[in-house]
Image 1 (cartoon, helix red, strand yellow):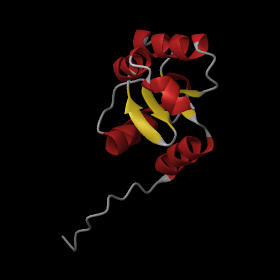
Image 2 (cartoon, helix red, strand yellow; image 1 turned 180 degrees about the horizontal axis):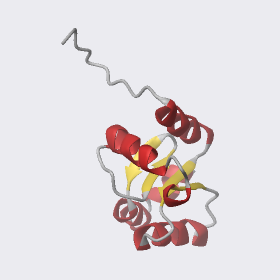
Image 3 (tube, helix red, strand yellow; image 1 turned 90 degrees about the vertical axis):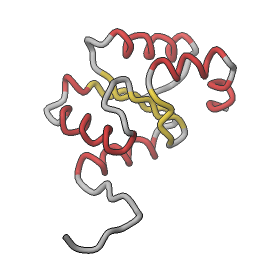
Image 4 (tube, one colour; image 1 turned 120 degrees about the vertical axis):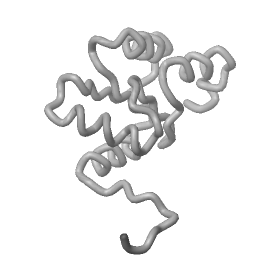
Length: 109
């Protein structure tokens, strides 16, 4: 099977897109328009006046591939997938927890 590497390889067009978006925006949300948790995450961020980038996976032709890639990168396939300052913070529950403890404000600076 060949040699193994301790470093994960997230090569591919979808991984590059995700990497570029996460590096170019303080807050990135990978979402679906019909998901209530995604709607709640967008509402929470909007109500706080947070400027964020959202990618609606169900409106993109590559949405399923992006979601598969997000699972590889983050360990979860569920949406929303929230990235703050280049790191995946999880989904809506984790975002809500960050907000309720005051850590979200700290992360956003």
